[in-house]
Image (cartoon, rainbow, N blue to C red):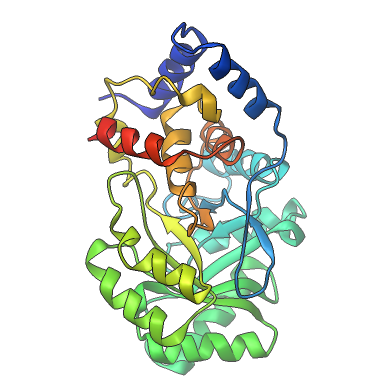
Length: 310
């Protein structure tokens, strides 16, 4: 089975050595490469902007303190913030992810730069939701978070009311609703339409585009920010392109790897505020971050990519 490391190597080599790109394409590549500011998107409910490349913590931050993986995460976070990124998505039900993230941010004095998005997850009732949130603050070593989301619509009426109460108290800046399955899109859309949260979070990738049907148009109309998860379809996308080269126009949009292409596809939908790929490896973090620079994909390029990936 091909690995993402192989994809990065093969894709970069193919692009660098390509003779298929014309002069105009190389000019476009040079222009993209000269850009030094990461794409930012506006949060409609406030007008605040947030960098379009975020990161998740599911799996990647569920590790042992003091382990080699823990040490690697220090570099992962350093590269993330050095590139101008800020948004980190986590949850109290991602094993010990919050217990790992909190100390890492605190020790590196990075908390002031972070836009932390966490969740009320797997709890029923206001008291349990509040207790979970208080534990989250302790784990994250902070007294407030930027975004509190109701995870996977669990007990959503009670938990969203609690999130909004915490927002009024100044412990939460924004509220949101999340899910990660195609089968939940209609229910999520109904809840978003009824409650109009600041954010919604849903799965979106080259091969899972169901959110385009109802959720994205609704988010745009109601002024709801969108976090897109499962951008690599749990890694399956890399297997689907293991024998394929990047499109000839990849250089025109500053793309040198499939990971960048998949993330840039998501960001090329105007409703998407940020993508949140998870990684515990510094080189992959650097690669993901590059998707936030340079031109976005045109409608024709997106269509061609969909056909190419299959």
